[in-house]
Picture 1 (cartoon, helix red, strand yellow):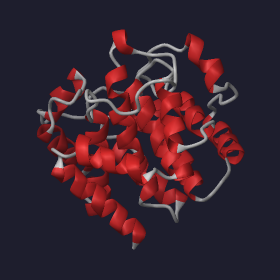
Picture 2 (cartoon, rainbow, N blue to C red; picture 1 turned 90 degrees about the horizontal axis):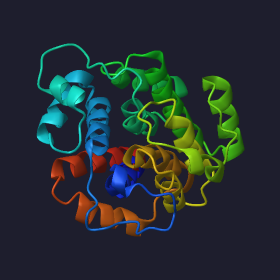
Picture 3 (spheres, helix red, strand yellow; picture 1 turned 135 degrees about the vertical axis):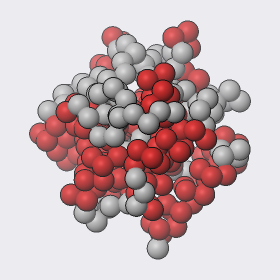
Amino acid sequence: MLGAIIGDIVGSIYEPKDRRIKTKDFPFFSEDCRFTDDSVCTTAVADTLLHDLPPAETMRKWGKRYPRCGFSQIFKDWIYSDGDAPNCTFRNGAAMRVSPAAFLNRENLDAALTAADKVTVISHDHSEGVKGARATTHAIWLAYQGKDTAAIREVITTEYGYDLTQTVDDIRPDYVFDMTCQGTVPQAVTCALESESYEDAVRNAISLGGDSDTLGSIAGAIAEALHGIPEAIKEQAESIYLANAPDMLEIISEMYQISEG
């Protein structure tokens, strides 16, 4: 979970069109970095699954706490309404927030995928949205089982039909900003599977020059399961970028205490 949030924080400043980059050579943290809706939604998912709360109501609760962190207008309108799910269909928000489903169900793949479905369909009920969330969950789950990158690549390709044959260097030159699961999840998975460390995975993702906070969230969540997160990076994220979000830190702490227990 924290892997997704840190990926979001690092990628937050490279999402605007005039700041997108095509290089891995950039400051990992900067004073302009911040957490975005990706982190808030990830926390809402964790809260939902930790405490068996209604997912739509919980997502709205967290959205109202942090309304100015980058929500799309469609999603923001839904947060403040009593209506049905927003028409986000197959946008990549389905995948960026789902890492707690794998984190909390590391002993049972079916339970992890069921949890992913539960928190996805409230806003992304298109088959591609559900698939993106499931594929992300499955990749994280496999990494927690100690599967190597070749095995993870084979399963995600076979089960979800994503093309994972390109390398990061193949993807980067022609990749453009894309908010769909089908244009984000395979690329983010590749960034994680090709990485040598947690930081390297996030750098891969941001270097594509796309929806950088979401690419960073997805790749970061998988990379956490593959490599772990260096303590210095955790400490900097929590003490600086999450310092004004004690409620989010509380959920993060509870997640990791359960894991350690």
